[in-house]
Image (cartoon, rainbow, N blue to C red; front, side, top):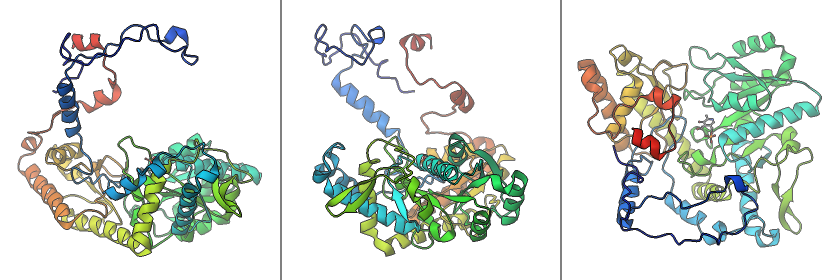
Length: 487
Ligand SMILES: Cc1ncc(COP(=O)(O)O)c(C=O)c1O
């Protein structure tokens, strides 16, 4: 295995010297004296060329969307146009200071105002806040607003319904906001039914139901057929509907959460609108709301006044969810993307996302089990249960894909599918790329049948057989010299 930079250190090797500032440190009012660091830092002594090679080699071990196909279901790891990055890094945007007087930032406020409007239009909502910094943060914002709304109307509704196919962040957000989460079982098609919903609500008392958090299409990649009836029923008992809009690329321009009856939605700008998901970069999870939730939105909301753009604090606002105005440069990329695609372009996003997923599903459906097989939306979930009987797990197939230059699909999620492999090709991949992936998966299915043990041998992966359980239970995330010597 590759050595750490500290392990490459040789005392006295050619290196840069860090000037000795001992005695010249400024008085620090922030760091208490007893935890202030004293003495020289234990920096590795490595020549510049070796430092460059070390980190370049590490970066090559990384797999990104710019390296290869990345069908990580539920994560929408799609190609994002580089020109949008360039526009977002123009100094006119990138060097703005959030404390600048609004007279000097009118262009930025215009951009935010336009984005608020466009997102409201895309989702069929009445108003949008750009504050939240991620999808889960948008969910939390939504749940806090639901709670504030029920407090305001004097109702103590404490139960939040979450379908069993939902993303894990949904129950977590509802719980943090003080709701009791109750799971709703999907039917044999992987869908929510009004019948099951009604039974659950009656069991917990209809007057206690705060609402439902739904993803549509859901994480099985299935469009919820009874969504309108679900909305009618829940509204009839005074509950609210939250739409997890992380899968919006599947339905852009075709169907809007507001028209389906939802009261609130979050967008994952860092999946749908031109910012990569994951990878440690900043995200953005704006929320859109219906008329009656508008007064509870977090502030500031950008508004147009007679004297230009300014900020507005809704009368019953839940407060700030983040410093300043959200992750502004992610907002820039989203607006540029929306402007470049336009109404028709957004529809093509949805069409291609759905077409690509169905194409792969059709090619793989005989070689693997697909428990909820039907026309899918932007993703689908296959099961490696048949292969597991021969001793090969979804995890082994995922490793084989990595070994062959594809990122693995999301595995073991959603939990209702055994040996799940959740495949989301996204709208940005070509037929050739999809075919290469399908060919590999079909080849694996044949190889597993022929010789399952041989299949599990991995010739190229840098780390071959990781003990996943030990790594998860006992993560070692900090290098300490003594430990290295012991090992
Ligand atoms: C369906 C769904 N909901 C919520 C989220 C949470 O979004 P984030 O990772 O930005 O918190 C995701 C993330 O991929 C998702 O796929």
